Amino acid sequence: MINGKRIVVVLPAYNAEPTLEATVREIPAVVDETILVDDLSTDGTVKLARTLGLTVAVHDRNLGYGGNQKTCYAKALAMGADVVVMLHPDYQYSPLLLTAMASMVAYNAYDLVLGSRMLGGGAIKGGMPLYKYVANRALTTFQNLMLGAHLSEYHTGYRAYSAELLRALPLAHNSDDFVFDNQLIAQCILLKARVGEISCPTRYFEEASSINFARSMKYGLGVLATTMQCMFTKFGLVNPDKFQFPEPFTPEEDPEFAFQDTRR
Image 1: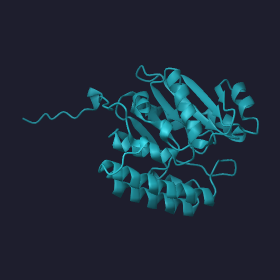
Image 2: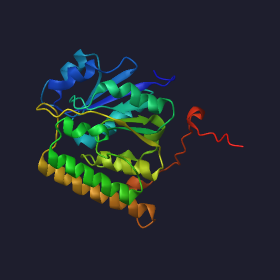
Image 3: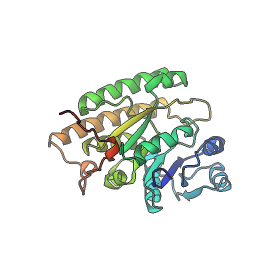
Image 4: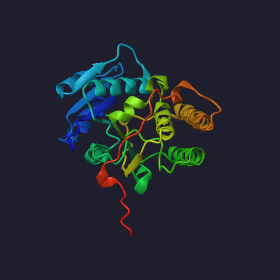
């Protein structure tokens, strides 16, 4: 626990056996529960996860990356999570940053914290292919301009959420593919959720999961479509289901983080 908040880590997994143990071994002791959701892997991911003592859920069919996350968050909330951290089990992101990210949510400083590979230049140092780096920077610049935000990266797979934020998001209407992540951030911007970032080194190596060029192109087009749809929604021109929020989201800031004007 952190600040009396229950911390749950979710691992959306597909053929993660080669890197799963290394990832799990670095998850800090502050974590109360670690849940692995397997998207019908063909290797020994599930067996290894159970050996490592993880809570395991297995899909009876492959639902895709976004579909996997929907199950992850539903399971975490059902288990009483106050803070949910989504960590890829491919060891591309450092689990050692998990305490810092979860703390930023647990102490009510932010509703969503992103592990950014762009802050501090970690992406190129970690081996991110040049075309992915250029596309990441271009898409992020475009989204900041269109959505009026100031994020360093929209495309990281390392995130910490408050349970209140996850409950407010209409995740069922998001894609089951990789653009799920981007749709979620757009939803958070529309909700005016407090989004923070932390510098996160990354590792690109043979066993780490990575989508190919064709899937990257599809993802990029999905990001452009999501951004425009979000912008049109802000101006009341469209009203898609993914940007309809049944209840208002009004998080309360921790008094310790509230600015107090002491001028006389």
